Image 1 (cartoon, rainbow, N blue to C red):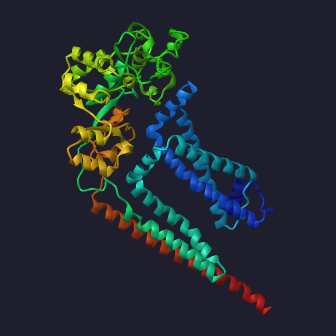
Image 2: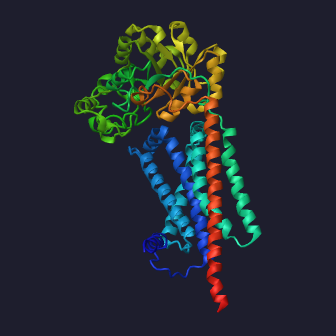
Length: 526
């Protein structure tokens, strides 16, 4: 009775045929089963890609903001849709395999067919969009395999064992020798690939030695805990024990350096209330606002309203009130905080490219402000490349930081600041062996921080200093001998289970044949 109920429910979910009657042709049903398998194979990797790319999700949201002039967490919407699609395809695939196991017809309902076609369209458009507009993210996906490949291999072993039951069932049901050979050879090839893939897995986390933990650099402060580039944000990053603040500097109309990431027209639109404080001036540039006007703007309400990192709920009411009252800070204010806590300072000059003369440049006015602060010169990590020689003459104590290896080598430098995906893990290790300090930006996820930790990175710029500061070890780190033991043990156990399942299926087939023969003997006697 329970089996009948199970079959009925299974049939109803998959095909909406609550009886065994169906007019669907077997060949057509097989085509749709193949299509379901194809979409499932695409949906699961797409979900993996979306999960890995989450480290850089704010880049996508910011790009969308520049186009639409409205802040929406588009990446979270994409992530939810992808998760629903992958889960739906996986469950439908399981139902299909159960149909096959109990010999029910594979009659996929038309609504499932429409949803699968829509799912294929979503994956195709997402992949094409990433390849065209966000193609550097493929480097991140490639890097991720160094952190996830050992676990993906173990997952593949589990999947292989689960699906082997149906493979062996198909093998024993096959009526021709050629079909049996094809099924078994295909399965053996796939199995061999899964068993032996650790031979090509190369990860810095499979190593005999673990480098020191990378230092943390607060990206615009601690933007998960406070509005970015505000004094509250930088104070919160001090609590995370960052070694340096990373920020963005621009000059006001009266040539005073202030902190703001967005530049060009609409530079105040995303993170201030310029639209309401100065109606009609929201599309002005930095040269149209004085310090006094900038200080009139609220730079915190947007954080509470948009919740860019989905962390506002973790703040206390007092912290929310403090965030709501934030204003646009001056560079001089941040220098006081950096000097007080002995924290270094690294910054971009957002409009340096517009200057042709050093003594009329953003670099010059910024250096003058730094000098007035009295901060130790060695606490300034000078990143802007425009007037590096002039800077070295009037401020010889600064640590010069480069954004590419050739320029660093040409100047005899020893400090590199690049995006985490622009260097291979091997290249990072080579640079560290040359005593080059390597700072990598922007690193927010545990898996990525763990991978770069194993690689030997000196420091990372992060939005998530509050999360990474508590890590005492990488998420995983194994010696080669330990990993080899795990690999061989998992393979041996899997082989034994597969062999046992094959024999069990063979025994069931033999019992089934014997039972059929015993029932046919009385009929022959009659």
